[in-house]
Length: 196
Length: 196
DNA sequence: GCTAAAAAATGAACTAGCTTAAGAAATAAA
DNA sequence: TTTATTTCTTAAGCTAGTTCATTTTTTAGC
Image 1 (cartoon, rainbow over the protein chains, first blue to last red):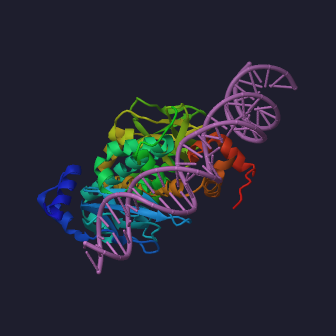
Image 2 (cartoon, protein in one colour):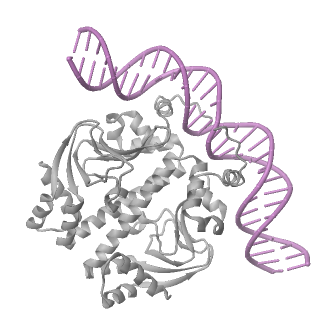
Image 3 (cartoon, chains in turn purple, orange, green, yellow):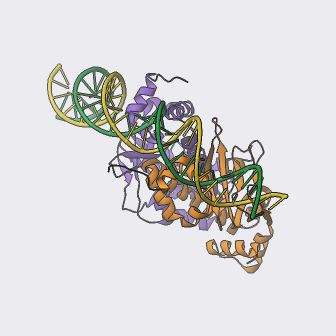
């Protein structure tokens, strides 16, 4: 499937559109091929785009005072990613967004998004729906972080996203789950001798 | 200011509307007075409403396996609160939402929200904006949780929301910041003898 | 103002998860 | 195929934050 067909299909799952409307929507995006580790958003630069993942995987992360990477979000096929604080307010980014593996994305510029929304309320509805779903999904992640132990977080993550577990580097998973790589390695190798 | 005037004012900050449109919007809401500790959403029941806080403060929280409360979100004047996973998908809630102090809220039912959005694209835009802002704000919270120590999280929280610090119970702040009450007590009383 | 209940403080013992360091394994590059 | 780079593992010592038990303070109801 061509990148543009893919996003049109995604759009059609959320709102009802005519063929013509779908075409207008698709034209607002630009396909981009990314090599592993390639950055598309960097701190201090304003995020000009949001990205829809056609193939591959991306992540956003921040480097803290200690120089550690903390993965804020992961995105695979059919997911969206950007630095939302930067993109929606058009202010300098604090996050990096990079390709985890060789990937194909569709980029949507801030201006094109504004034009789409102004042109057709259906597109406004579409962006409202994906924002709300993002909100709900972030709420779930927050709950997991606050209520579960490192071991439980990993178990649930592995159950929820089996495709990640084997395909993306472990240090990225560890930084997404908020634990050290070494500790995740221990968990994975069942070397935990807990009492309970 | 009357509750309805307050939300109309809030609406006008986000989108341009005529007096008539504003009135239609205001009529979709219902004012409700809540007593301290009163619950408006409970697990297993589907969240029928989202709430706009006119006066006072609310929080959402989840009780984990150990029986501990974990505060997921706080809301004061001009903020919105609900269990988003329940409300937007209209499925059973996992969170409690309660009034922290005596409060006045405006409740908006799921059906009324759908009607508003169907009736006028400007309202669709409005809900898209608040969802996006919620997303950006949750991203900031996630970053804080992943990158900062308990002490830093409290310091930043106190700087960001000074109104909370003195007005809401400490155990709620602790559970929001993801630490034990005892530890927060220690931080507050400068009893931390850290080296660095 | 008195009493009961809820919230906060305190301190000691404990532990989940981190840090550091060094080596092994896997992947990529040349 | 060799070398270089990145990723993963293992283990020991450490610390940020928890748990538990008790006391003190604050809040709320009557």
